[in-house]
Length: 181
Length: 178
Image 1: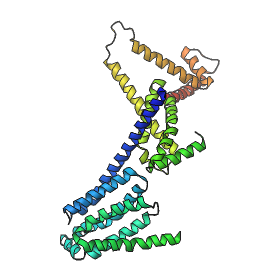
Image 2 (image 1 turned 60 degrees about the vertical axis):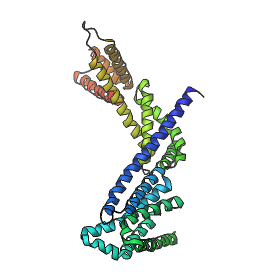
Image 3 (image 1 turned 180 degrees about the horizontal axis):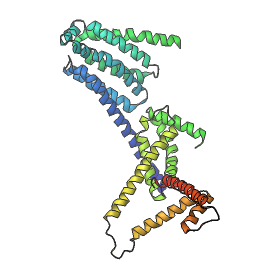
Image 4 (image 1 turned 120 degrees about the horizontal axis):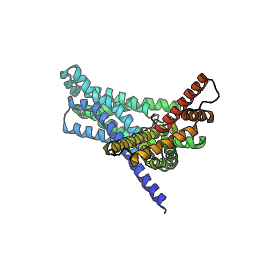
């Protein structure tokens, strides 16, 4: 191995490190943006330990998806976009009237269902650009964590509404897309 | 770079921007000679290698930000040019700082550094003159020597002016300053 080969090898290692560092920096920026969007959902109505775990899980999925790239990145982005709607719904309700937080507990099925349906539509539309296990795994993880931040106060019925909403919103979009293709 | 290489670079850099690590080696193999050659054209040989390395690392650290709708070669050269410019500015500031810290010689003779700078400037001027069209170079040399070709005064002045403008443009390209 000549000196120029050794030099080129070390340059390649440095370039690889620079690439990975660049991806990590981009991921942390995206994580910060995701935190800015999701934190109102956590602070308003719902500051429980479980919601904190969901918030941390959401940020982890967004950051890890961006670092890993490919289908994971596309999926985590789609899931984050879709999940922000049900995540922020309680915060929006609280912004209208603080007493309306109680509404979330009593009518969790419907409120989380509406948020879930909107999320399902967004996810169905975004799945055009990528598919496969990496996409769906990261998309559903990001959506699940983000939507949970908003739906934890509604309890099990809220999660049921969320799941039904996602299926009801996403299935027609996916079916229509398959029929067109 | 030919059209095939350009298309391959576009494809590989797009894949790398999306996070496909398998595209790293092909992108590296395409970019290193390209960036080294580009730096070699913009900087003196002793600075070119360092600047090329910095530019390459910068390109890879920003590879995931590459907008895949843009032309990869233009983007790469844009990032490299910026880095080379930064390198050149840094080198110039270092030189200026080193010069300002040096004591002036008491007898008025130029220091070895000043003499070297003067020699560098002279060589750069010669290179820039060689890059000019021969009539422009001849006009400027005649003007510098105080000679006056067999031309009407206003015509000669116009020619000198035009040749100086071209020389300034060449100097700016090669040295990033006037």
